[in-house]
Image 1: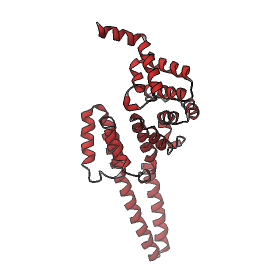
Image 2 (image 1 turned 90 degrees about the vertical axis):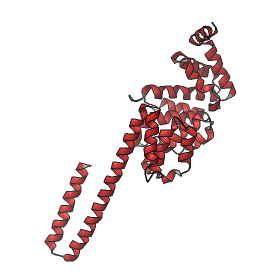
Image 3 (image 1 turned 180 degrees about the vertical axis):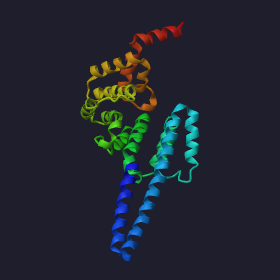
Image 4 (image 1 turned 180 degrees about the horizontal axis):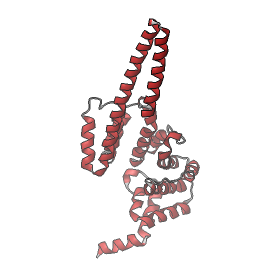
Length: 268
């Protein structure tokens, strides 16, 4: 930002020097008007940056606890521009963990094109996550198909986005494309474990949808080796998983050594 301001200042000074040298009053008036317009744009941009920094700070601080999320949500909801697309998206992000349906209703009330261009893929990604969490796979697929996974300015989120899109594809008739997409993912250092888990979940859906039952079972067993509770993603009713896949996940869970130990301890 500082470098840009320096360049703008230098160019403006050169234009003024040229206008003064010509001695033309008309030219100096034109340059003066343009300078005032430029100052207005700079002040507007600076105010937008301040708003974005405040919003990012609230979102980062809200990760500490549910109370922190509620406090941040209250602050954003109380702003005079609380219904602006950017604020709506920020509020939806805060609500997603505690009230996914409310978060979805909040952003679904605004058309995607109304959000800033650099935010639209993030909005679609949040929609994909929320729809999948509710078992609304066709809606997740529609949201996934609006995303540009190869946007060079979004390399840092491609891995997570691709893993979510792959699950949406796998569950709506595109298992081969889902597997190809999963194989293209390069895990980042940040949030590696979370993304790797999502990739494993998406692989289960892709294998099952491709009628590779044995391979799907192996993927489920690998998840169970990490933590048998991860299989709840295929059993809990809100996810609306195919009954056969749910049955397979239950079988893997019940036959896993750690799960059997827990059952025995509970029965004592």
